[in-house]
Length: 218
Ligand code: SF4
Ligand code: SF4
Image (cartoon, rainbow, N blue to C red; front, side):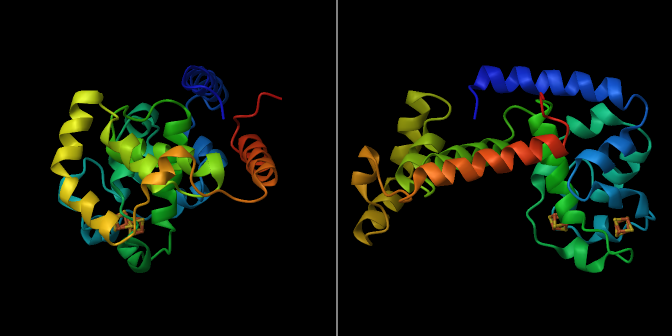
């Protein structure tokens, strides 16, 4: 894992390289680099997914519209959209799609790709939480709930963190009483025994994923 600045630079470099390589062929880029992206061309624009999505009225682009935009080459509009981040993985669309597209996975794949290129909306809450969750988990192989909670509360600064903590104090105390929150987690917390092995697995998986999705520098 790099620093935030190096991650941003790597994303910008990867984006420039992808634009040059897939000029005018966004569908091919999605097919090559987005999880299950090769399914997009199978969409027949029936609208069943758009009508089935419980989030339908609340997001800018339904899956049906996103797939149409990909085929129309609307790269920037798709990759800067926050619609993919709104998917709650309810799988309603997937079980109903007459063409059996793995819609949920494509939506998450697009969100991940946009994030890695540095094009995803910066303050999108799902993206922010997923990033914090991943960093928390990857450090020790176990989620440190106390540190994750504090990271979420204080993400917008000290004052707003204190305000959020005060608002949520009832829940925090309830968790403490029920022994679901351990204050000692702040000084370390539980971790995997073979941390070195775990980090080696993550590094290898990242290397394979980077190569597959065009983020490799090699
Ligand atoms: S339900 Fe399937 S075929 Fe119909 S618009 Fe959605 S993705 Fe396309
Ligand atoms: S899985 Fe996502 S895109 Fe599909 S219906 Fe549910 S929320 Fe909508």
